[in-house]
Image (cartoon, rainbow over all chains, first blue to last red; front, side):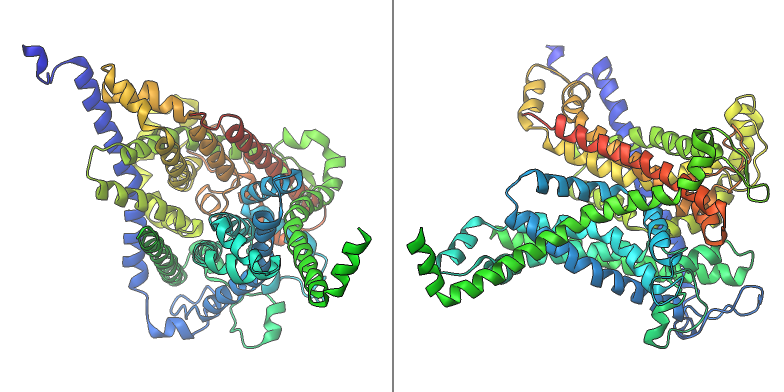
Length: 297
Length: 315
């Protein structure tokens, strides 16, 4: 009769308990870093947030009294990410359209899909090295060397695979009936794609693209020798072709400075970067759950 | 045939539209080809830029560790060794942690919403820029581990890996921050592959009397193995190419040392440190190092993709 009851001391039950607690332990360790990192950034970075931070130029290191603000880096990040988006989104969405709508699963599309995955695995610093060789060292852009534009191009290489993949996968989810219906009433392929399939897949594509942009905004490695860094305000269009600061490179440069004032600025920049990236991520997550629910109804 | 063609010609609107359609199709075709062009462009450009250094040092570049811009002697052994050691060791720690977390998320030890929160926490960790993790590592992690490293050296100093006096930034810290960065990758891919294992298998295993963990170890994990392996390889590729956090915490020293408690170097941290102010043949040597890094990560990535294709679940 006893064998019908749960026996605590049976070796299989003891083993199960052990492994279960091990698994819980792993999960605890896994979430600890996020909690630690975010808490520190909220405390250390949040304490530095002042109105001047958003409007002033950073002072060159050495002057320990006043570090200034991060206005040029903030604007620079916006500008560089915008350039990257302007390049990567049309190319990526166009490429994704070809893969999902036109290709018939032949060797070419297989090769491109493979290439997209490989490109996604290329280390981000290699993208910087590539743009350095192609644009910075050749001075091909109106004789300018390090420039915000070159930085944007390096980032666009990193965004491209994400945009193509999300477009490809988003379009694949559009039911074929919609396409047949559109073609059936006499629309041509491009009308069908632009007016029917793309708008239907818009939400999922947009979510993926926004996440890709958020990811690119935090990238540093491709920028350190393409856009370099600048202490000065971005005032006009021609500044695109000169060195340009960004939040990410500011964090890198100022974290390694021995001066406390610069370190504080790095924490402040981290605060702004992390808060915006996490906000975008959390909102797109909620958005995705929300659309999934409405679809089921 | 003739008749058909004239018929189409008479439909004027159709002809224009057909052209627009063709232009649209070819534009998208060109845009998708751009991926291949960029990929080949990267490989070719980096290769040709490294050619000067390649022809001078040949494969010796990979096994010598002299890096001296003054004497114009270059060898990347320290950086290559550092890249391999930091990525492999961090992976070794990440695999059990990540798979354990993935099992926690896919099993039902705790209510679903708790598991979902843990899952999204781990995924949000992936969204934190690596430069921010580097900043955190410098100012929070390094002081936190300082005592521990002294202890490690005192009691385990006889092991070669811990044989040097710990002083500030070192390779072991780089490994720890890499674990933090790889954890989301391994966890999310392992979770996806565990979720894909059909319920039938689990029920059959329970049905013949296996306990929960017997089922996990003998049925579920083997079934999900290929997916997990692919995730591990992707993480390895990421670890080798990871630049910012590692550069900020590894100490950046080209002096070779077996000890993890001394400052080290990786290929990517060498690039990040020296590329901006290098000139002459140093640039070419840096391109050579970049080429080595690219080949390493390409091989790992292609192998991962092949693995996914070859062993994708057959249930």
